[in-house]
Image (cartoon, rainbow, N blue to C red; front, side, top):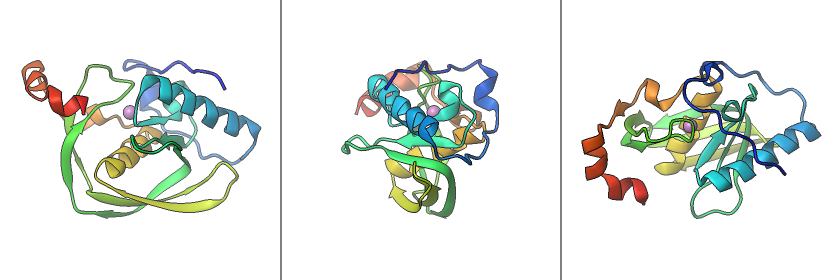
Length: 163
Ligand code: CO
């Protein structure tokens, strides 16, 4: 495994649409392993391939209480229910936080690294993370639609962000 550099805001690649994965090969497995290592070091909840400079429909989500990441290849949200408005950030947008409008729960269809189709569902943080990462694959960043917090608001909410 190898660490990859996380692309930061200002790089055009973050606003590009990713290509569908057609080959479930060693290169894809390597990308997933590297993304996992990169995410662990960055201490994030999720990471999408464009954030490491690869325009492929690949992302991972790592819930704080789980050891294994959810690996999503060519994911599609097939069901959205309810709504939530919580604080969100992004490893590509350090220091930026905002309130997003997300479904409370989602169901996602995707392929695993071996090309096998599976379904995953999540609510609250997991739903936000799934939506956030899948947005990345379409070149959408949370700052494109979030209600951004000011420095003052951030200080007031610091305890929420640190949790
Ligand atoms: Co992000």
